[in-house]
Length: 499
Image (cartoon, helix red, strand yellow):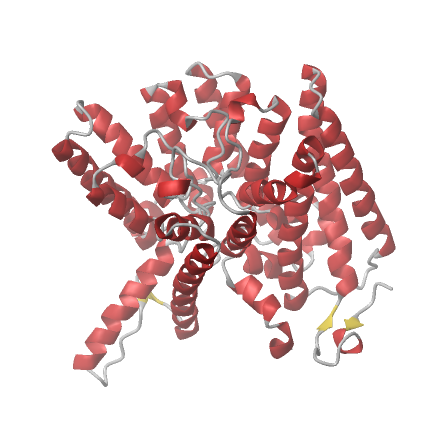
């Protein structure tokens, strides 16, 4: 039952030798983890005596029962067979399963008619997109608000990385899983064993999250507000407990605190690991980090000057705070808002839209293209221009003083082209469903890049509730494809050609 399944026996068109049993077994383990996660908001709801607690108990029961069945029925022995094909299939399946399970509390609370909205909200949470269909989040039960934040926090570091950290069996084939899911084209192994690497990443993630919670509590936020916004900041997610997002607190210290932790979340966690060990040499030598910080500073400066020249704000410090917060929020793909930037001057709006295609550093919780890919693409363009003048010269693309292999450069270039094509295709499909062009293309960019708010009908003061149901399905798929960084999904779609 749990052995290899030759897909050719299922369909003459396919010839894929995949250990389906191992994939289903690990999905069972992941379902059990999600069931335990669902109990956290259930217990909060129990303490507060909210009716919504029963939705979480039922959802946890369903996930737990299905997970237990898959784990027992497809139990793997010592000859656990898990390679790249299984890794790609598991990663894609895990995000779809997590989205479905995460949608259960919303569906149980609002009815079957809410299914599409529930799946959209769940996908937005786990992919750390932060696009919401709820028009008044402040009326939602605390347990629902906590679940929205928790889905982002889990998705921030990745469901599979969590599994590697806490489930021993997932350590088998662990590098294949990280290669299929982890953000960025160049992965750095922090410790000799993959399970230790995952635990190190989650340890750093947890410490930074707890630090932000502590600071926000000290600044006067309530426990739920502090936890939810710390979860969203470190996951670069953007779900808030307030309709007005961070601006609802009307506090400059809170905004600067969130800005700082968004910047940290947009950095590579490999760098955080090195810094915690006292190795600060990468601070100066890391080309991607310098470009990341440079983009933040230049973007902030341009928006700041634009706001001052347009007299959008009356205070110099307010203009600096608003511009820094919004630029960091967009570049790191967090999606928080402290102002209606859709009403800002045109230069600021255009720049913010362009920054949607940057993203954080590779190995961060941010989405979109990633700084390192943009760096490699522009370096590649420069090298190609030089080759026109020196056709026989050996001119490798370099990153941080070392040459980048041609296959990596080619992969990055292909990724960039695919990302732009999917962005355009997504926008065109949304216009077919009746969405106006500005809303359609900004929503496509915001969801594919896991940013959340866009412009016009999905701007910072709006939400995705008014988007047609079919368009929400398209946007939810774009979120998942963007979170999986395109290639994992492409491999699954063209599995038979790669077999």
